[in-house]
Length: 307
Ligand SMILES: C[S@@+](CC[C@H](N)C(=O)[O-])C[C@H]1O[C@@H](n2cnc3c(N)ncnc32)[C@H](O)[C@@H]1O
Image (tube, rainbow, N blue to C red; front, side):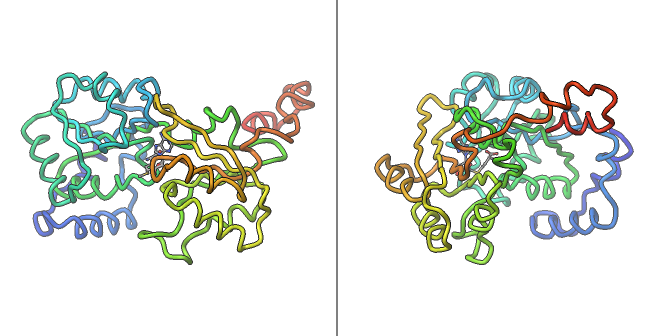
């Protein structure tokens, strides 16, 4: 264990068992001083503790090598239920006990993982896509760390990246989309004021990736129309990107809701709004244009290359 790990993982008996108290305590500590592990560990490092692994979008081939190794070595895998393709569990979790986290609250999940870890088991918490996007991972990690169990992230391929691969386009595209928004629509979690889908679409050069909004495509599109957005803005809905039953619906702000309703999808799709959806109308980039021929004479070449 590094100094940062020793310092960061300090159990506190006072609020043990109360996840919100643990979240508040960990947050307060982070605000005062960054977690030492940030400076000692890199994202791909195997670390002490329970890894929170991104399973990727579904296809077992889109799991990272580290994620696969951790699953193959695991004794207990707590996974995100139907959001994780069972083919991936069948392929890589031969020896592990599998527990579906759906329907379990923190009060149940934390002791389950902590007890197994303290009994010396290799525990993996498996989230869909990347755990940092609508994953509710940090609260589990905080609750575990508060009780003295170290944790760390192992990133995964988020649904938006699988959807862009399926659509054979880029989320950023020269002269079409300079920005990407990962967002979700209003509903149980977000109020009307917290819903920014329309703001992102209104910016024009943003590819707006709407998670957790399959059931609300019509409402979302109607709000966009009410806000005066062009009904012809392209929209794609990618259901189960990278799964065997993947399906792609393409349309516009004005037409996509009918297509989603005809197909009957209520969950598990990513809604992508913006001109980049069609992969058309873009200009060649500087990277393989003028910049390419200027070589080291151009001090900004590296930065341009990132484009
Ligand atoms: C709770 S969020 C989890 C997101 C996940 N952490 C990620 O990075 O992709 C679940 C939402 O992600 C989207 N999603 C997850 N996997 C998907 C896939 N394979 N294809 C399309 N959308 C997906 C859907 O919008 C779904 O409602």
